[in-house]
Length: 507
Image (tube, rainbow, N blue to C red; front, side, top):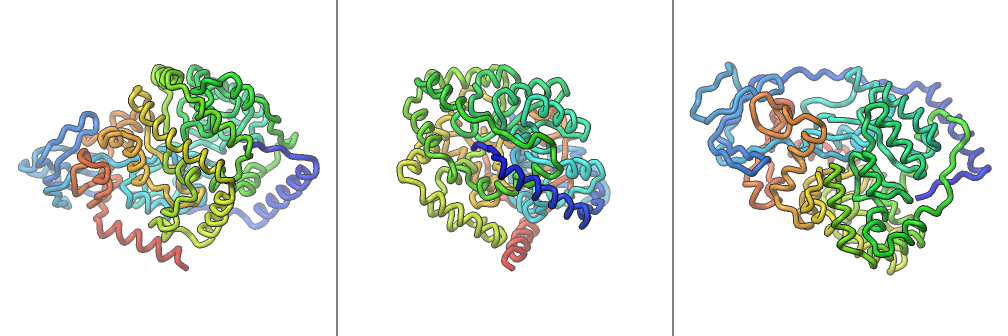
């Protein structure tokens, strides 16, 4: 996707942004209230089989004691309780796993507490927010984000995504990164930028002690990005960067992808411009594939038609050697490239979407269906390749995590349970998928000693399952209960959450 503003559009943008800023200031941005989140009380889960995601070891008939949001003791069920006045949960015949983590989500973009509650009902106890604002960072410091024991916990978040309107040059990117560092961003999210800005962003982030993650850009070599410390690649690219690197026609296709007009922006920084641009792009972001230029789709087709398995294997080995993380978000890629799949029209998640979001999604889907048959066929072939690439990365030892890209760009087919199933379709084992959603996020965040396992001192974020998750990936969705920060939610509680969100969005 390319952004270029001519003079007329630039003038219109300036006028609209100034008006938007005036309206914002005059109306007063509503401030979120301070959120009370008291520590949980004593809880004892009795009789479960504990699943160790490190190696799949099963330990039956265990008791897990929890207090103030932490696991305080793990012992055989026969051992007497060490806590007084404890609430007991009968989990005999159940399987206990660490809570799931969605490591690519936009759950805070529109302050959707309904979306957060649905994530918890899906077993998600933690998430990495992949877009932020200065206000979000401030609200986190002041405990104003809508996060409690009834929502997943926020694991990390950036400031505003870097795009040409806040990072249009190496100098602008450096300034923006410094601002985000001061504001408390945990990392830098790369959205859209020219190659020289991309390399400058990596260097500036390193200088500030921050990691840069996100999107590979047209004209950016994935191998060089790994060598220069691009910490995590999202959506297997996205786009054609990895496929060009894996092509026999690499040199030709790379030169073509790099040869495009530079993305330009206003010569001065304007308040709210990045928000205005994202608002203007809101329908494009529902499915960028529906709006891609024919020449870009054709280049994708040429890249996958000239696929070189040896080149791709070498790239995967390089990612593993440089510990370049990947979050495939297969569900996000699928609902773009296979948007005309009739199954999406029957997706259960539609009942939880606001009617306005459904209408926008349907409009964009009609645009996708209107693409030439050959373009849609290229996308179908590409998704099959994406499944193959995911398996190759996993087999090559590339560190990977689960994510959906859900929350902000409203469309069906983007739950974490659906991501688990797509990863299984790619050929990953249930244990590998469990690792990608538990211990791998802990390792990525440097929190191996407090999340991702069931042991004394660890966060009390747990999922109680009706069936062994190592036998079938579908069993990761057989949820009998969820414990978030020590707060227990039964299946009846979770079902009530789903009904409440569905009812609210049916009006």
